[in-house]
Image (cartoon, rainbow, N blue to C red; front, side, top):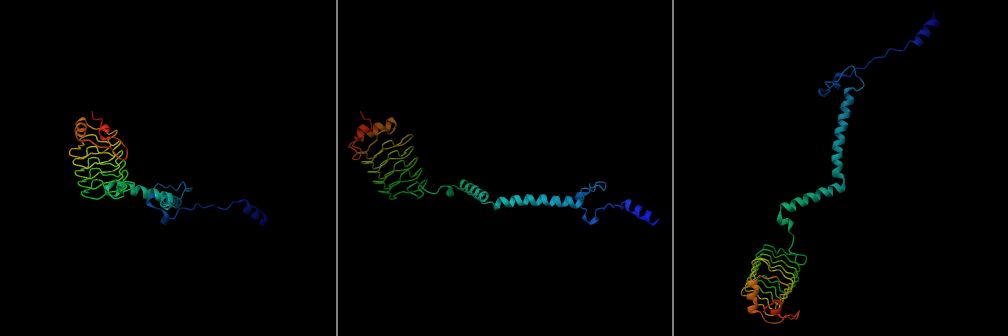
Amino acid sequence: MAALNIIFSLKIPPKTFISLPKPHLLSSSSSSFSLSSPSHPPHIELRNLQASDNNKNGSLLSNFANPIASASLLLLLSASLCFSNPALAFKGGGPYGQGVTRGQDLSGKDFSGKTLIKQDFKTSILRMANFKGAKLLGASFFDADLTGADLSDADLRGADFSLANVTKVNLTNANLEGATATGNTSFRGSVITGADFTDVPLREDQREYLCKVADGVNPTTGNDTRETLLCN
């Protein structure tokens, strides 16, 4: 009998017990949890949810930790500030003259002999300003007020005088080859002795007026002022 008891005890498998989740691990978010499906207990779901949140937070933090991403964000922020604030966006007047010269009152200022290539003087007030002998290639005087300014001996090749007030200006021996003078640009009362107006598009009324006062030869180009104005 003892031997039979040992045999039966070896063949009968031990009882298995289903472990139910402990009440303190249940949460309101796991109310749909069923006792009949113990393969995904609620504490595993909580861990998975926390892991998912941690991964999301980690990815955001990694974006800021990444030097390239951080640099990109800083650049975008800087650009938005510059475009929202014109004062920040505009840093200088040109590649040579770094002072702010656009939309400014620069009456009587002395720019004589200075190199101001492609300088931006748009809409500025430049009454009686001194530009004698200045290098102003490609400079913009768009809609600027140059009344009484001194531009004698100045290099004004390719300069833009569109809509500018160029009345009573001293243009003696100035070189204006290829300059622009469209719109309401006026040279009334200006001195143009020896000025070179080669390839400057002028309104017919302005051309006729300048031809009445034109004389001299430009010392730099050797061109006769009247010929550059296509005077009859």
